[in-house]
Image (tube, rainbow, N blue to C red):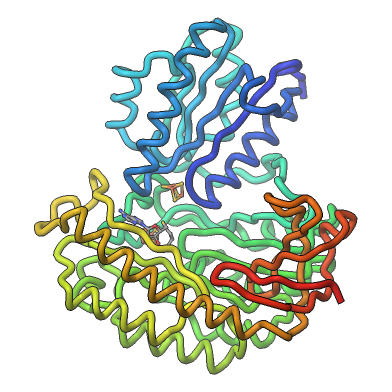
Length: 440
Ligand code: SAH
Ligand code: SF4
Ligand code: F3S
């Protein structure tokens, strides 16, 4: 490959979910294949903003960042500003960019990231601006290079898009319909990663339970990945409760490498709200599912996503959510204040909840969730856990952080040479969000 981007210095700012993080790894891989070099933001002459549309504050942060970049563009004529990701799949965003942010040079979407290096080269050599966004996804493109953030763990995309159309959610519009990768391609990628020293893979998809390729369903894929030498841990996200199969629950028992943690977004505990969210399960269905998982997989850690203040949510609906949380006793949870998304069905729903009330409910919910997180973490004290060491802690160099099999964050004193290894750590204390341990 010709090194057309030699001596070019780039920096990527990633907003949003793991899907975007992994796309950014691929963008890095493609740019470096052509000779570009990753640098800190302030030294970059190419900046790429990989955006997320899931909530309004993500939009705000993006436009704020773009505002700041105007100065740099004025000071340096060769500075190239590129924007991509989910926001670019929304026409009203592109219109806003063209009207109010004319200093943006390259706009591309989620379906054509493989074209980015070519587009960038043209923009640089022809000193022009380019917008190239595909409305629909094309064929899945295999074998794009990726520059992984970690040596010992890696994301693996198994499917793209979403068919569920939860009424609050923008993702089906920005990521298109469900497409599953061929199982053989996924196995081959896992084998290559293992040869490269990767011990843990996290399978990514908006709803991995509906993975389906010619020769495998999702559970089948896990059984096959469990046989890949060198891979020691398998995780996945995200699972939609409506189609989590008994076969998958059984895989937790049969597949020694499948980690005992599951992210199972519930969104609400009220049947009425769940119905209007188009989630296709009831509170009872969900609680039964959780009981089945807990009964089959002892020590499993369960986490979730919850939205408060969905249009029309009454105090009673909200009480149902609190009640569900008390029953499940989540290990951890991501909580969100409902945010209106343009173009989704819920945008038109009546009885939008006032901001103040949304915040009041949000705080109440967090209190309930924190209580169970703290209790769950306390159960670990005195146990010895296998921990995959990720790196030095952000705050103290001599402290390492890692994850237990069940994805609990553990801090402990240790030498950086342990990074990437799975070691035994005795848990000596616990807080709401992490565990403290000592190497055995
Ligand atoms: N596909 C995944 C996650 C999608 S987005 C899943 O279905 O679980 C991650 C989370 O963002 C969702 O689970 C939901 O809790 C939250 N979310 C999505 N749209 C939102 C909105 N409009 N307002 C607030 N939270 C939202
Ligand atoms: Fe959005 Fe629902 Fe699809 Fe998740 S399953 S990405 S919340 S539409
Ligand atoms: Fe955001 Fe797109 Fe992910 S909207 S949450 S970056 S799929």
